[in-house]
Image: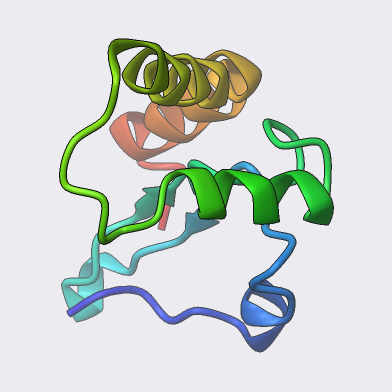
Length: 100
């Protein structure tokens, strides 16, 4: 089982945030999930940039050039760098029992 996702967090799939934390519940055996959309309003500079990334990196493309692959890796790194404080805080809360 996975944690519940609030409607507000699903409200704008064409302009997602760069990080979502879905809080788990130990009693219900639901884990906390950290989700980092690769194409998001921070990395892609808003909805128009997201559309461009989605076009360039369509899921039906089976291989990428070295430059395209580097662009994807850079976006993933940026997600972590942009959210390192939030990631650290959530891990600390879960380890210390402050996370539910």
